[in-house]
Length: 211
Image: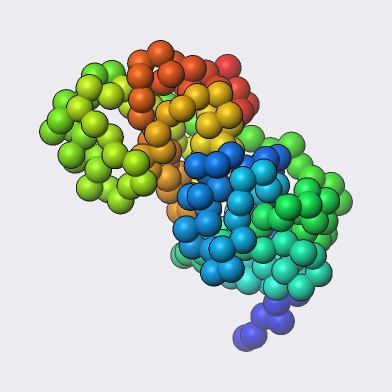
């Protein structure tokens, strides 16, 4: 049996994450742009991540949003259970318009005030050179160094680590070591001084709706 690809209310589609980033910071924009085929992601742009189920729904959402708005995308992932789409634009109204289109297709009339269902954080102070080498094998941007403090943030759904990463960058100079934005859960690893890690931890929890 073939699905025609017309999502709507009552079709079993669900919105797992709706993550709006008001203004991408320099490091975060560079991270987003690494896979941008048009190299269109720059500092200051607005951004949206949506995570949906079933995974294949993400193709219809991307098609509608990109055809009908001036947004660009650097991420379209359809895994076994969940699909994730990223959109960005210099004009925040274009991003909001894309969000409206996506929500209407899923069956929602307004942008939801969603927060992660699960947030786990860890602070590790004064990491050893061996620990740093092990973490650095995971696939990184900046390097974790011996003596650094390390902040680890995990969220479910995964897309919320984008909000944490961007907000922490507004308030600290922590280095972004690792980002995982899709799958069952997301992971963010940041590194720097103990004092900045404490600030980053507090900012991340506030951004994600924690205490």
